[in-house]
Image (cartoon, rainbow, N blue to C red; front, side, top):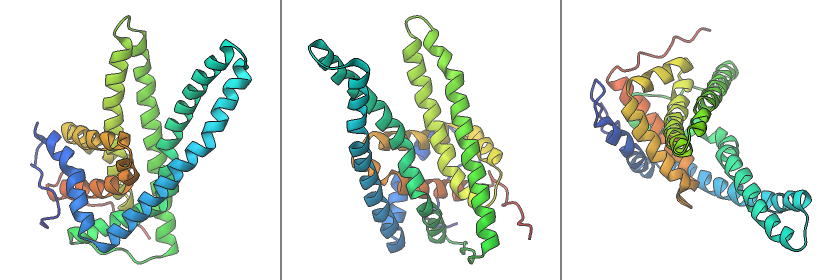
Length: 263
C-alpha cells in the first residue's frame, strides 16, 4: 500500500477521531508534492477569495437597504435599522458563503480527486468519453441532491430542541455542529465515491460504521470553514482529504470494489 494512503485499523476504534482530524494535514503534504495539485489548489484559493469578496460587495448594500425599507430612518429608527442590516447581512452572507464557492468550484473537484488518486498509486484516470462524462455527471448530481436532502432533514429533526426550556438553544447549537461535521464528511467522501459510481447510501453507511472517524474528519473541516484566509483553501484540502479517506477505507476493505460499469 502506498505510504501516501492513511493507515486505518480494520475495525472502528476510539482513536479514529484523531485519525480523521489528521486527514487535512496529510492532504496538505500530498498536495505540496504534486505540482498539478498545487496549481489547482492555488486556482481554487484565488477563485474562492474572489467569490467571498464579491458576496460582501453584493449583499452589503442590499442588506442595509432592506433594513431601511422595513424600519425607516430618523431618530432611533436609524440605529435600529443599522443593527437589523448587520443581521440581514450576516445571515445572507453566511448562507451564500457555504454554497456559492462550492458551486463555482465544482469543475475543479474531480481533477483534484483524480490527481490525488494518481499520487496514491494503483489508479489511472479514465480517458474522456461523452457517455462516461454524462454518466458520471448525472451520478454526481444524484449524490449532491441526496446529500442536501439528508442535511436538511437532519436540521429539521434537530429544530425542536430549541423548544426545550433554558438549555434548548445550547443543545441545538451542539447537536447542529455535530450534524454539520458529519455532513461535511459525507460531502467530501461522496466526491470520490460518486466518481467511482458507488451509490450514495454506501457513503452514509460506511461513515455511520466509522462514526468517530467521520466526526474527526468533519471537525477539522468545520474549524477550517471559520478561519479567515485558511477557508479560501477549504475546498481543495477537503477534496484531497476525502479522496485519501476513500483509498484508506478501500485498503482495509471497509468498502467493496466499485460497481461494474454497464456500457
